[in-house]
Image (cartoon, rainbow, N blue to C red):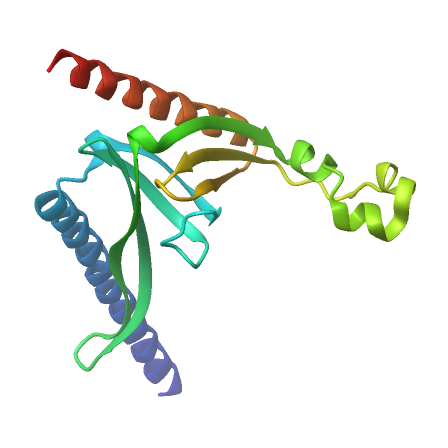
Length: 196
C-alpha cells in the first residue's frame, strides 16, 4: 500500500517537473521571439554574451548580458528567470529580459583585452599604501581563468570603462572573438555611413 502511494507521488512530481520545464521552455522561446519581433534583436545581430561587471552609467547591477548591435549602437540586454507560482502547474521559472543600456558606436574610443593575471598584477594605490614596496611581492594565489573585454567610451560628458568578463578554459579566445566581432561591426557601420 505504502509503495503504491510513494510511486504515485513520484509520478506526480515527475509530471509536474516536465510541465514546469515545458512552460519555462515555452516562456524562453516566447521572450526570444518578442525580442526579435519587437526590438529586431536576434542571433543575426548578437555580438557576444558575457558577465557585465560595471562601468555603464545606466546599469547598477552586474550579471549576465547579451550584447547586440542595432542602428549603430550596442544594445545591452539582461535575461533573467524568476520563480513563479501557478495553481495549475505549480512553481516554474519565468524567463524574461529587459534592455538595460546602450553605447553609440561613435562614442567608442578603444576596445581592449586583459587577462586575469594582468588585472591581479596591477599594483593598486591601496595596496601600495598598505604595505609599501612589499606590494610588488604580494601576489594572489587563486587561479581562475578569466578574460576581460574593456570598452573605453565617452557619452559626451563623461569617460567610461565598461567591463565584461569571460570565464572558463577558453575565456581569452571568447573575449578576443567578441572584441573582433565588435570592431568589425563598428568598422562596417562606418563604411556604410561614409558611402551614404
